[in-house]
Length: 363
Image (cartoon, rainbow, N blue to C red; front, top):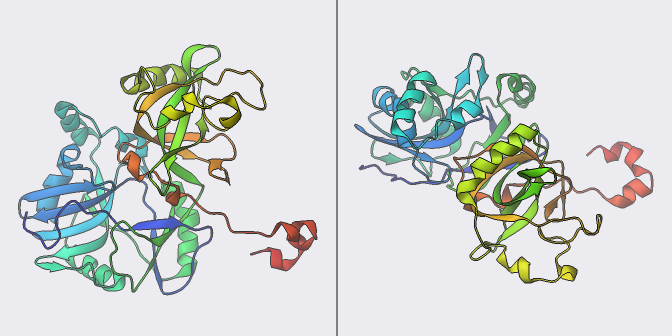
């Protein structure tokens, strides 16, 4: 493959913000799918995920369509999505990641995916990484003007009012927010320089263990971890509100990742720590429930799960997180604290002094 930009390439990322930003921005819907960069050099086509994992073998219909619909030599950033009727279906998309070639072929015919393009990184022999976003957008629309299904160009607007309307209306179609992009921005791989406004707080976490349910040999809760700035996997909380049938299914899903001992596990040192120093670690005695059994089973930290959470308390979830879905397209190493929303600071004294009732509290 002879392109000005070679795979793999980490995509440019967004950081969560609480309100819709204003300024010299382009607003786009936030698509609910697999982030993907497509590299095409003639008949050679490669699909690369957000975590730089190859997606090519899982979406043969997109590979074939790329040869037909995309410019002869190009690099396009976008999102692989799958729709059912008028609504995006992420669960069906998740099923497309399957090890069996026969299953991949069948699903590509039964539940074909689409690709929503939102950035052009290279065209012919020209790299566009240093070109401002506004110009890249113009070049994208021009380059893909004749592209047909399953390729689409995402809508974009410079209107803050339109962005707010999209945020409210597009949720009904399965989209999960709005992305705001500075017009003068060059493409910055693996940098959180865009802004995203989502409908709820979510995080992609590593599953590093589980606890048995009190009623028997079914999963009670999953132990969640995030990597800190030094590359250490920190325990951030649990997710455990599953129906009983789902708890039984999780036993089979986790079985291939179970470890017989804690040797080599990121949290193996906790087993040797004393009760006095482990009140916030997975195997500790709960300070609220006395001698309640909080023993846990280690699993290899290779599975990624998306959870919803209300807020952080220090470096952990304040309450139990809620399971959303597995994320086969994410690597464990990409699950860091950096992805988390940081709530807008508010002075506690303003509440104590009654200033929370004043207009200036609305900020």
